[in-house]
Structure formats: structure tokens, C-alpha cells
Image (cartoon, rainbow, N blue to C red; front, side, top):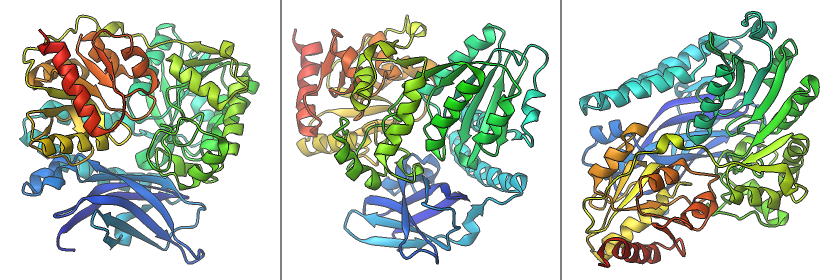
Length: 541
């Protein structure tokens, strides 16, 4: 135990949902898995919610500079239990790579339970989470990354609800005359990334038309539904009790279009298709379904099976075996774990949609594989507009030795474990090859092989790549991404790019003059391919 360091920064329980974050690392061993064991006197067996661990915690790394694993010690837990009985005990179960398991009892004082007094509970959550943000921000300030600190604070403040709506009719009262006409209702997560960027541009276009947008989203850190109201005059965020509340509120307004962006992270996601169908029936609005991920197909929205591998949408019998054991994405939020029911309820939404939009041919093909009843004529394939990427060409100055560049927040689905394996293969061979992550990686890697810049702003990307010395870019995502702005950015910079043969990125890289489609996901084979690719691009002459 003396070699294990850990804490819980925040742990919130509401109904049957649990959300929390903190950090943990062992001085001598890697962590193999991390899960919360929840027990109740009314149940004979415990339930488990797995944590996503290995996330960057610069503050912990600074506190424990002699421990290599401290830098990637962060974890997040978010999932649902089978019923709403409040747990009697919660234990953090840490399995180490040596096969041992350590049980860590979670003190009741660390758990924030929602009560009827929403404001009081929300304030406790905000204070506790803000305290953690402040401590992490001190590291950024001391490191001279003041702009990164303010960006982090801004994202936190802009993400949470400002207050709560008490009655449904309060929503209509926000609008001045004509502002409540021809509304767009958008359902979307609030987790950041490409889907949110798309939604933001969509809302900006709606506002330019002189109209208003109501965004229904879910604020994970306070476990609350939230509506964001945007027009030329308004930019406000309110928590609401549930989606039924919004249904009643929208009956007093004029809705012209309903846009499904993504429902990832919503609790009780099986209620969403029926909500959207009923809203369409009530308003006669046009319903547009956008495929930013594969939540329409499976609660494991990256199509990762219970072993963490891309499933390729197999026979339904294999899905029935996989889903109850699947801990990836937000799979546990669908408590029934019945893939046939999931496909039935989301298939009903696709059936009534006026338009289904995908951003690549690859996504369209996978969607039709899951739903053979969909005709190709029902799907519009519209790649994202990336005009803002022009004039960003980066000239590689240092062409040798091979320096592999990886861009983004590299979590498990983005290939973090593969990068870890690749770094170990480089170290095993004792060759002069390095990996630089422009962004962050959510696993511990050998620092002599892998370096990382930390979070960056888009306008910094070209200069960071230039400063890094990266000369071959690797896009290591292990799921069939529906587009990937990162790949498009790298291609617009005229950089050599390699990826696995999955999804929309491979579809585009296959026709790119400086592209390489990797033959496998085996680290040794990939390293061989990258060395040859590097030689062909720079050293053949």
C-alpha cells in the first residue's frame, strides 16, 4: 500500500448514475484496470463501473517528480447502475500488472449525493471541482502556460449551467417577439471535439439567419440535463430536470427543424429517439440525423468490443454476447444492455428522419451494414468544410532521423496503448527514433522515446509541429472515425501521414500522395513500415 498513491477529487451520485475523477499510480507497477465496486444491502452481488485511467495530471507529476507514472495518473469514472438504490459502500478496486488487486474504500465524505435541494448540491460540486481546477492551474501558471490556464478556466465556466429553470413556461418567456419563431432544436453532447465544433458552426449560421437555437445537452460533471439558448441577444445555459421538462416547454414555441448531433454521454439514452420522434410529430419540423459517431449503432459508440478492438459490426449474436461485458464508450448508461432493443429504438429514429447525413462514404457503409433497411438514397454524404485550414503548409526542416508526430488528445480509442507498444518496440531495438505527441497521451510512456507538448490551441498547431521536429505523422486511431479534422489538417499542411486501414481517415489518405495505409496494428510491423515510409519520402534521393 505504501507504494500506491491516490485520491478522489470528486465523486457524484445521482439516481443510478456515478461520475467522478481523481488520480492514482503505483510506484513500481503499471495499473492494469481500475473500477468502482458498488454494493447494496438489497443486492447479493456487487456492480462494477470501470474508470478510464492514464489521463495527464501535470500537477501530480510536479508533486511527485521522481515517479514516472505520476504524470499520467488521472482517471475519470462515469456510468450507470442497474437501479436507483443508493449504494451502501463504494470501493475503488485497483488491479496491477503483477496480478495483485488492491481495494481502496471510498470515504462517505468524498461522495456527493444529489438531493431535492439542487442548488445546494450543485454548489458543493462546483466548489469541489473548482478547487481541483485551481490546484491543476497552479502548475500551468508556474510553468509559464498562463494562456492554457485561462483557456481551461474559460472552458469550465462556459460549460456549466448558470442556473436552473423551475417551470417549463420559463423557457418561452426568455424570447422577445419573433425570437421564438422557426426555432432550431439541437441535441448534442457537451464533451468538446469535432462534433461540438460542428454544432458551434451550425449555431452561428442559425444566428446569422436571425433565428434562435435551443441546444439540449448533458452536463456530466453535475449529472444534469442542460439547455443552451442562443440568438443574437441570448447566450444562456440552464439546467433542467429531464427531457420531459423540455418537451413540455417546447409545446409553447415554434420549431422548424430538429437536429440530432450526438447523444453520447446522456443518461437514459434509450429515451432520446422517442423524444425526438414525438417532437417531430408535435411540430411537423424537419428532422436531420447527423452521424458524428456510431452511437446510432451501439452504446459503445466507437465500435470497440469488450476486448477493446474494432468490432466491424458483426452478426447480432456476437453483439448480444459482447454488450453486457462492454465497458468502453458510454455503454453502461444503457442499463438493459440489449443490442436488439437498441437497434430497434434508434432504427425507428432513422426511419422517420427527413435526412441522414454522414461525413464519409465509410460511415454510410457501416450505417447501412447495421441497418440493412436503410437505402443509400436516404443518406447524404457531406464531408466537413475545412476552408479555414488553407495556407497552413508546414515545411519539414529536419528530415532525419525518423521522428514520429502524433496530434491530439490520445486516449484509448485514439491509439494510446498502441503508441505505448510502439515506444517499447523502439526501445527494444535501441534505434534512433522518437515519438512526439503534439497534445497529450493517456498512458505512461518511456520519456526517452515519447515527449508531449500538452494541450494546444488550433492556431498553435503548425508552429508546434515545426518546433517538434516531427517528419512523419502517425494517426493511430483504432476505430473507424467518421471524418477526423486532425487528418485533414495534416494533409493541408502537406505532411506525410500514416494511418490504420479503418474509417474515413484511411479513405482520404489512400488517395493522398504523401499517405500511407498501414498493413496491420502490430507495433513491430508498423515500425518497419514507418522506417521505409520515412526513407521513401526523404532519403530515397
